[in-house]
Amino acid sequence: MRIGVDLTAIWRPATGMENVAIEMTRALLRADKVNRYILFFAGVVHPAFEEFSGRYEAVLGPVAHEALLKNLWFPKAASAARLDYLHFPIFPPPLWCPWTTGWTVPDATPWMYPDTMKASSRWYFRLLGGRAVRKSRILITDTESARQDLLTYLRIPPDRLHVIYPGVKPVFRVHRDAHVFDEVRRRHALPANFILFVGTIEPRKNLRRLLRAFRMLKTERNFAPSLVIVGRKGWLYDSVFSELADEEFRASVTITGYVSDEDLVQIYNMADSFVFPSLYEGFGLPCVEAMMCGCPVITANRGALREVTGDCALHTDPEDVRAIADAIWKVSRDSTLRNRLVSNGPGRAALYSWSTYAERLLDLMGRLS
Image 1 (cartoon, rainbow, N blue to C red):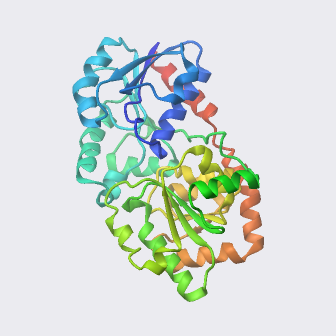
Image 2 (tube, one colour; image 1 turned 135 degrees about the horizontal axis):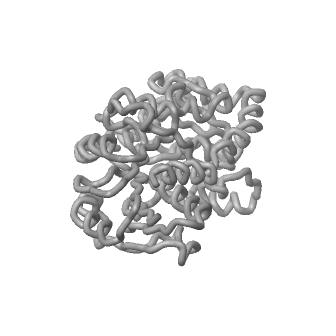
Image 3 (tube, helix red, strand yellow; image 1 turned 120 degrees about the vertical axis):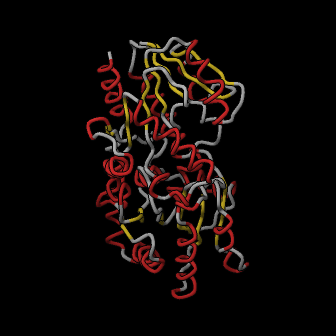
């Protein structure tokens, strides 16, 4: 088979969905020695695929613009590639899409939490996503929780939507090197002790409540560690930065922006705990990365985040500021709980494997022929 993969969205600094697309495709290239792959990029070949030279054909789009590239350039480029199957691991297929396709549906955010998205993104997903679930031969999502949400909101026949858990990159592991820690600390101006959040700065990540919980800990309990936020600005983030108007409070919060995986693994290992009170996730990759690094995880008590972390995280109500504060305090003070989370986290995270993901996706693609 000639298998195409749409990677036109990975030109930007990779976060959750982009990382899943990259690692899914790398896993397919490692596992599959039979089929031929045609990878579609925006502008240039992504460096993550340099080691697979000769294993795929690269088709380069002229611009890094999702709507224009996907709906104007992509149909012609994909037709010329003579594909047997075309997979879309992030955004849905274009309006004109006569090929046999599959789509990895990230989650039900556009339908469940539309106010956390830009209007253009919300309607793009609703228009093209609604069509994609009717037309795609393969539909995948990351967790059973996300599957149930999508079945409810999009009325997909249950036998058409499959769950395949993503994996975690091998770079994320327990690492204890004081010299490397010092270098990373200097490079990103990190405090000596800190709790950590990792993710794009946007409404669904619930950073306003996290900041309010952190302020509560500072004022009511004289909480010593700082808060480090790792992630690029996304959208609708002004309200997050309004929480930092007080200069004294702002001094206890460090925002690094996007950082490389090589530095991020060290930051996970340095952190006192990882706090991820997201309102909604299809998987919650940062939680798995943190667990793999032996960092105790505090996350939301709902949906995919509870499913993915199991009993290896402390769960809390993401809409209750005091509950978030209490959870952070508990992990900082309860050594038995903390040691259990540190000890059990890597084993839980190791359940999520990219090789298993590739095997299951190849099986689904094989059924098409």
